[in-house]
Length: 238
Image (cartoon, rainbow, N blue to C red; front, side, top):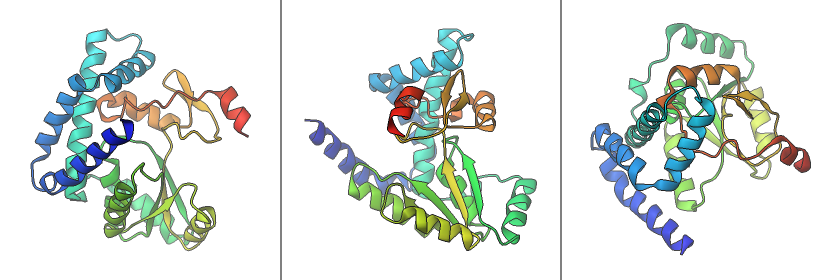
């Protein structure tokens, strides 16, 4: 039954892609808002994580943040399907910093999180002319993996699949050639990692990401179970 549900979801997404490329992003936001009410498991996860991060806020306020984060995810999905990165704003000083780092002839690593339209952010950086790459996990379905790969590489973002044979060697070669590598470090990847404080619990992320999330909490993906792995579990994997 689980495999059947996954197949239905994949086929529905593939069929919807042409519409997502032409319909306004507000439709995606409306669907995301609706998902808050129709997908109870993800709603429960979001509520639990918001309670951890913002215990001082009333439950009604946390629910508002959760609903808006679902809407933002739906909006971002439609914007990503359209592939227009021109609307992503990159501060002049940030762009100058990236170009300066790349001009030094060394590889650049950009650590960020699943905040806002993160897929379009990578494409916006690639539009500066810097060779860009990202480390990603393959989707559960090969058709979705290929869809992501094609969309990213069409925009100039090379994909390094986590766990693929020789991927570490390819990444090092890419960085030595002066490439910019983007890594999203705010999720539980079920692999050995280093723990640092994040939103009242421990996770592989940085203080800068926490500050961005606290400033714009509706831009984050609250339904991801990013705090399910704890330090003793990581220690056993090492």
